[in-house]
Image (tube, one colour):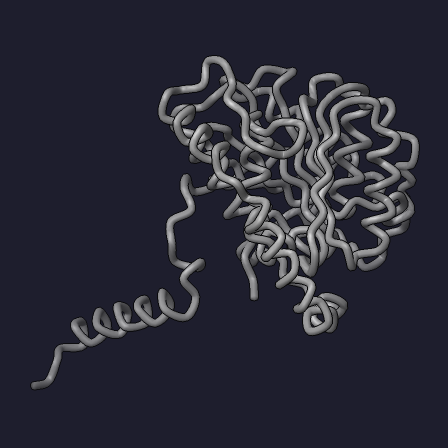
Length: 320
């Protein structure tokens, strides 16, 4: 029996969706609230594009997500949606020359291929503009902003936070002491006693050394997450299955000094039960098995980790 063109199109669409769910399940499952495109200017006249992830029942505060060089705000889409689904809204920013932030307010094109170290460091103004925008939103107190940054985005997060007491906490993925000519050694001291999370993978030598130096310099609470074979920056979100949950707990304020969940006063009963259940688990044996398995894969993964990836502005956060 012949199908009508409209039925054929519908059948083809459903078939494609079914195949996608089998081959790429992460690409089709719901991640939480959808992002909304927003824009605002930097102080020096750059038109900045970003994605705002609102929360239906927001807790006080918000998260700012800062991507790696040659990437975009899309790398944070899954994590930002998940965090917003738990009540903390977020803003994923396209730094100048990346994603949608490729023009000045006057319409002049911005080419990051010719950026000097001074141009890269001027991105600190992008962070300041994004934080200022967040503080205009409802239920975002000035002193309840958290920042998650990867690679150079981590450097920018630290540089901004040291002079902004309203930044409540930082999470730095694969930090470096001198990415793009921006020296952050010694700057973590000015961050004071505020909470700091540092995550890196053992084969990423520069990030390991930088993370250890920053952790040693930090005067306050520091949680260091070490992985094996997880890659660099936001790649770790895809390669290390526990990192997203760690970041979620960190942003919710439900991680203890050792990275284990804790129960906070005033936490809703449903969340309290979830945390208590997780806390009772003995993960030591599982962690050892996972790390040993990762170590066996390091040699095979090394080539993929070191391989230069093509620019992927605008693509979803999860990639193969």
